[in-house]
Amino acid sequence: MNNITKSLRHEISQAEWEVRVELAACYRLLAHFGLSDLSYNHLSARVPGFPDLFLVKPTHFFFEEVTASSLLKFDFLGNPYQDSPPNRGGAHIIHGGILQARPDLNVVFHTHSPANAGVSAQKHGLLMLSQHAMPFFNRIAYHDFGGFEFNEDQRAPIIHSLGSFNYAILRNHGVLVCGQNIPQTFVDYHYLETACKIQINALAGNAEFSIIDATVCEKAAMQYQTIDPNRHGGKDWPASLRLLERHYPDYRT
Image (tube, rainbow, N blue to C red; front, side, top):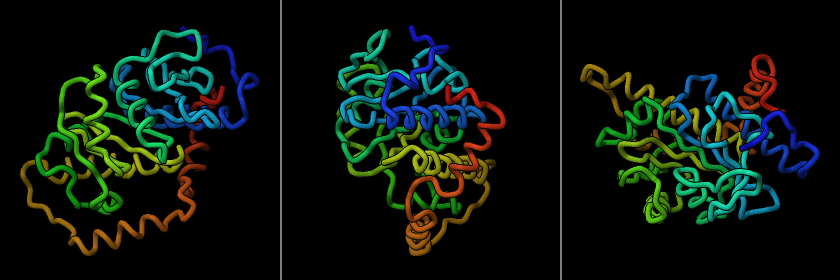
């Protein structure tokens, strides 16, 4: 379907290539940190200069296989812009739907890890148990499970549930983390995933737990926005790329 040995570097714009490299980096980083649900879950990004097109991994790829050149390009109707089948299923319904409805967003991460799917199954949702949860205080949407996202009629409910938020817990399913650029979306995703892991651990065995006061939560949520005023991944993104250069340099081919 897609020749991953052929580099697209000189066939596309510099801006698109840079987005491809960043998006491939995120796939590899999440694989490195243990995210694996076989060939499921997707990370997507809008194509610079072409707001009605987006990039996503081939549906049969594991995260650890993705390279900059292997990412596929589709429009919001699922039509391919390379020699590949049309885009159908979750990538089309969720990613295409959100990017079409929200022109303020350029990036969508959707995963269902054991930790975030576990929190999504808890009636109270994400609890303010840790500093990693602070960025999402009163800033996360919830969407009720309506079956596998295979059908067009499931686009509108997800878009409605997300509203103007950038983050969502899909109940009994997983999470959405959206953003304006790839580096910051990756960092935001790390915080939400870690908050979910902490919550699962804290609630294990029905242990007593402490909820952070709402006033403190709001203060900390505002503080999070100042950690990196440019909102472009801060010091963590360059360090993450250095990790990839040491272990998986082929991600940028």
